[in-house]
Every structure is written in C-alpha cells, then in structure tokens.
Amino acid sequence: MEGIPVVDFCRFGLGADTEASEQELLELCEEVRAAFTGVGFVYLKNTGIEDHEVQQVMSISKRFCLLPEEKKEPYRRGGYTCNANHGWVSSETERLNPRRPGDLKEAFNVTSLRTDLEWPRDGVDGFRDIQVSFFLRCKELALCVLRVMALSLGLDSDTFLEAHRFIGGEGNDSTLRSLYYPPVKSEHVKEGQLRCGEHSDYGSITLVFQSQEGGLQVLSRTGEYISAPSIPGTVLVNIADLMQRWTCDVLVSAVHRVLLPPGGDLSTRQSLAFFVQPDDDAIITCCDGSDKYPPVRSKDYLLSRFQDSYGRK
Image (cartoon, rainbow, N blue to C red; front, top):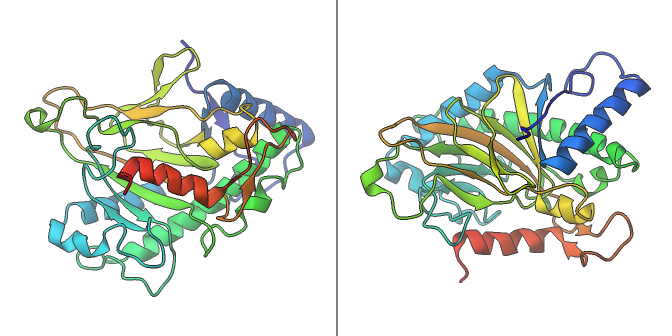
C-alpha cells in the first residue's frame, strides 16, 4: 500500500538563498502534483519552519489547555464579536464527523490577529505573540505552496494567490489551530467516539505539525486508511474541499481522522493545523472553465461546514 510522499522544498521554502533552476522547479511541480492527485497529502521537508518554532507554540498551547476550565471559559469560541471562529473549543464540543459523539480533543483557534482582543495571559505569558508569529510564518509558507501548486497544474503562478490576499486580516478566515488531545480513559469513552472524527478540510490547503504520538490516518483512493505519522523536520500538507472544487477533482481533498490510543495508553497528543481559507468574498469556480461545480462564495461554504461540526441551530 502506498504511503504519503516526502518532498524536498528547500529551494522554495522560507529563507531560500538561491533561485531554483527551471529543472528543479519542474521536478518539484511533478512531485507535488503526483502527491496531491494521488493521496491528497504530502510531507514537505526543509521548508524553513524549524522544529523549535513548532515546539514553542505547542508548549504554550498545552499550558493553556491544562489551565482550569474557568480560566479558559472567557476565551471560548463564539464569544468574540469580531470573529465567531476565534477562541477556545472545549473537549467534545466539536463533531467533525456529525454521526459520531463529540471529538475527544480541545483547541484554540487563532483566526483574528487584532491587538484589541482579550488574549490568554494568566499562566501563559507571551501567548498572543507566539501564536501570531507562527501564524505569519505559516502564511508565508502557504503562499509558497499555493504558487507551486498553480504551476504544477500549468496555471499562472499567481492563480490561487489572488484569492488569498487578506490572510491574517479582516475578510479572511484562515486559522491557526492548536489542538490538544488529553489522556483517554477507556471507561469514559462513548460508543463510536474518536479523538477526531472522519472529515475533509474546508478551504484551500492545510499545513499540519504533529507531536510524536500517532493516530492520524488518511483515507486513500483505494478505500484503505493509511497512517500519517509525525516525521521530524517536515510539514504535512493536504488539499481541502474548496481546492478540490477549484481544480475539478484533479487535486484530492482526502478524508482523515485521529484514532483513540491503544487501551491503557494514557499519552497525550498535540498538533498544529494552519487552515488556509480563500478570502471571504472569493467566488470559487472551476479553473478549467467547466461547470462541474457551481460557483460558491468561500465564506458561505465555510459557514455551512461549521454548522455540520457544531450543530445546526
């Protein structure tokens, strides 16, 4: 069974000191296209984002998640008037597979970078600065990846960038999500419950950074789940739904999940996911000019998926 390819991004990542040759670009485009048309996921190594940057975000995120619930409650998702997705999500609140019980994870979503928001401070000094700094690093890398993706499809390099001009500002809901999976006590697990239910992502692409604990699986085109373990020094990148629509199913938005640990394993798990979303008012149409999918406004699609995950009102 095929696994997820590992591709070297050193000549195109952050801080690359020399311009890539035409041949190097051609080879990279072929590798990226093969991964995204095959399994929908790829590991990129030598991106310029270092492991110590990832660990810094994971460390402060875990400290926040280990605070008493009353300390986290003021920052709950839905409590910010500027952005409904920004903030803390408690365990079992979200069901990424609506047919299963709530997911056994909690998260903090950084969707707004506004300085006038209330950010966690008590016991987590530097929380905002660390999260925002990493958000901006992920933004830079995501734009590099989107450029290569466009070239891999024979499109102009700016094709996808035009719809991602406002990442980090008003008018774009791209989100850095710090996920914490607490220890699982089997006697408290509901029937069918997972750490993260089966789902596909919503926007353009997602950048994923994982701790060493396993559990992430990706549904292959043959209908089998394959493991997507943490590989030090890499970023796991996957295609999301709007990009699959945009490319008329050429690129694959693969379903994935996070399983429970084996019985008796009380280890925790962490991940960081940077969900790249087109600008709110971007209209996503088939880039080949066909009408395989009707045009959809980015924000409308995102809100419909949130209703599925958090319950329709």
